[in-house]
Length: 252
Image 1 (cartoon, rainbow, N blue to C red):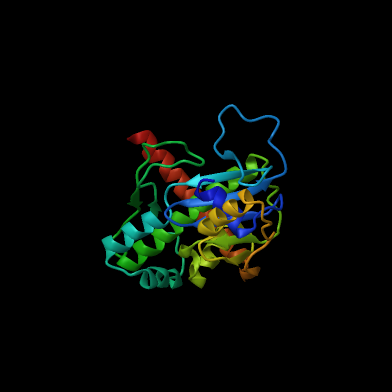
Image 2 (image 1 turned 60 degrees about the vertical axis):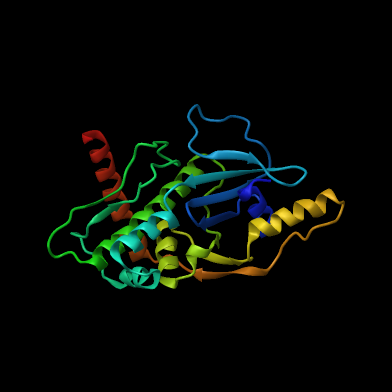
């Protein structure tokens, strides 16, 4: 099992239709599949993999710009992560800068290693806090785009069940609220320490003929609910980010 397959096993994500979001170095959104899809698009933007059990598959939307991009922003602005997240308290304004988070290029959904990052729309009134808030929103746009690609692929229906939230970069309640608005889905935290390591241990147990539990840790509890105002505000920023990204890509 590779790291994601092991994490799927370790976190107990095995019911088709459930979705799990991990914001670590990058962004991974994963859902279990009951069977291998019969027909794949000519240019797929998501991945389909064999899982670590005796049978079954999972689909994944993978973004390159998650925690690694925010670590760069944190270092550049001299703002520890608590201060970075505190910038989300600033009210959203139409003249806010837009952050293009593509420091590493991007996988899902753009499949373009040449994409690069930028803060755009800057003026003298903007502060470090405005840049920090724009960066967090920009990374949330990558989460939004990856999830939309997973729904478009048919791997998940995009229903109202909570999205399971995993990973060390998702503990701050303000960041969780932004992600809930970005997905327009409730978020439920999965309390499994080192799911990949646990999944690796499970593969050894299965090889030895032992049974493994179907679920581990505490049942996921809802930690954030999307709000109509937050969803609408985020959709506006996502549209502006996409428009600026396409314009810059075409211009450069």
